[in-house]
Image (cartoon, helix red, strand yellow):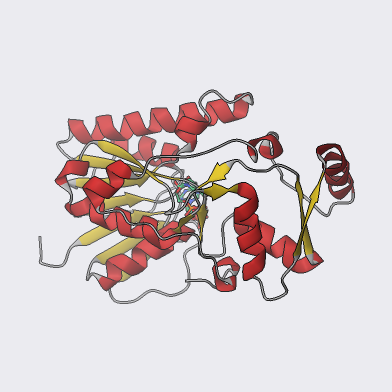
Length: 292
Ligand SMILES: NC(=O)c1ccc[n+]([C@@H]2O[C@H](COP(=O)([O-])OP(=O)(O)OC[C@H]3O[C@@H](n4cnc5c(N)ncnc54)[C@H](OP(=O)(O)O)[C@@H]3O)[C@@H](O)[C@H]2O)c1
């Protein structure tokens, strides 16, 4: 293989995938990236492939590293049978694998089970072909303005001038910036201690849900207000917002979870990958979809 290293990136158009490709290109890697809707731009060292796991285009037959930044279960099924020579695989899973395995909601338990099974398939297939896999499990992701949690809160609050929470949302959170995840994925390539291992990748600060929202609102130029309601009143407000079509897509159990701690240990990733995630100091541009 030439001196230039070649990467194949699944999910390259996603928020983590885009940050990873930027880092790979800056480090001199040639990248082939797959997405159903590739961005219109590429460069000499970045080749976009249009496709999805159900209908893949022709992929490289060999590369130095494969990165999965999209749906892990689909990637795992592809990788098990893929005809590709590659010594390293770095795939993103989720801490939901641990936090939702005993959830009350059967859909959430099923998600945790799917993630666990997908990780096992990736590790198994890598071992069978003499490759080394590393699994990375982020917590709540932000930073590229395309996440479905803080960016949604920011967009709604910017539109209405306020954001409503039930009182007592003190469950601990560890929001993690997309670029810290991209740095960890790149570090994993060189790190033999990470071969065959999975790592939680939480953000650099652990803070109550309420405080995470307060900082998000404070970062917005219009300074939307936080309104905290007693739980029965909040439930009523939520029902009204749903009925009027002003709010969609709040999953069952999401409100109860705001009071639960979702905390993971960054220690193993710090030790092996030199993982040093930033504290949660959001800026308005991190919630705009043009964020890098
Ligand atoms: N967002 C979070 O808070 C969070 C938390 C923990 C873990 N994770 C995990 O971290 C990884 C990166 O997350 P993310 O938020 O960066 O994801 P994202 O922004 O939603 O991007 C997902 C990527 O996967 C591609 N994709 C989706 N379905 C596909 C399919 N059927 N075939 C081929 N490509 C497909 C998407 O591209 P196209 O749509 O263009 O195909 C996109 O490039 C994922 O594994 C995710 O599960 C996310």
